[in-house]
Amino acid sequence: MKVVAINSSPNMGKGNTSLVLTPFLEGMREVGAGVELFYTKKLEINPCQGEFNCWLKTPGKCFQQDDMQMLLPKLVEADVLVLATPLYVDGVTGPMKNLLDRILPLAQPFFELRDGHCRHPGRNGSKDSKLVLVSNCGFWEMDNFEPLLVHMQAVCKNMGSEFAGALLRPHGPALRGMKAMGMPVDDIFEAAKDADRQLVEDGRMSSETLRVISRELLPLEMYVQIINQRFQEVLDALEKE
Ligand SMILES: Cc1cc2nc3c(=O)[nH]c(=O)nc-3n(C[C@H](O)[C@H](O)[C@H](O)COP(=O)(O)O)c2cc1C
Image (cartoon, rainbow, N blue to C red; front, side):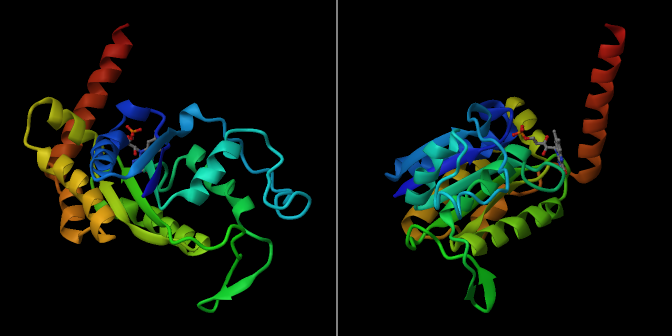
């Protein structure tokens, strides 16, 4: 099984997104999947220029010479695509959106009806692929992920791939702090590791496992109080400098 993971957090391996992504990919490697991880921050992926050359003048090829030339064949080959992104203004980060826009060469310009809905036929034959979303956000509530989930499910329908589920970590910044303080959060990392084993072995992740990854870490009011206190401390310290 080939897995391509893309992490679009500018904090890369030190970010909160990585806290859940790392055990997830680790588990995949342990069950024998070939995993390649890319950070958008290390890639040059320019925005789509919207001139449709990849459909018309040079079908299947974008004129922009950047890292999408290397990434596109890997995306075509992948059995599982893992998109990891912190929630940015209720959606994916800008670099992740640029990357998604640049998959246009994989589609043909024509329209076809799939389940009574307009779609573009693929260019590289049809391969059964799955997409997994990994995300974390600063706000406390799970409902912050709703627009992102709707987007990712729509992307899957557009690409003709299966949405295999999402590892979502609300009040994500708390996880790092609690881990550093030695508080009991290992169940979350274990669940992330287990989720990918389930995906590789059973083709799906159990809703109970995904629920553990998203579980409440601390009550809403306490989280708001701690976050506000931390920001105030930083502001006060900066003012004194
Ligand atoms: C530009 C920007 C936009 C953000 N937008 C949201 C948001 O809409 N909702 C939310 O809950 N958190 C939002 N956040 C907070 C991040 O999702 C949060 O800090 C996350 O833990 C960052 O993950 P990382 O450490 O992997 O980069 C935003 C952060 C930034 C920098």
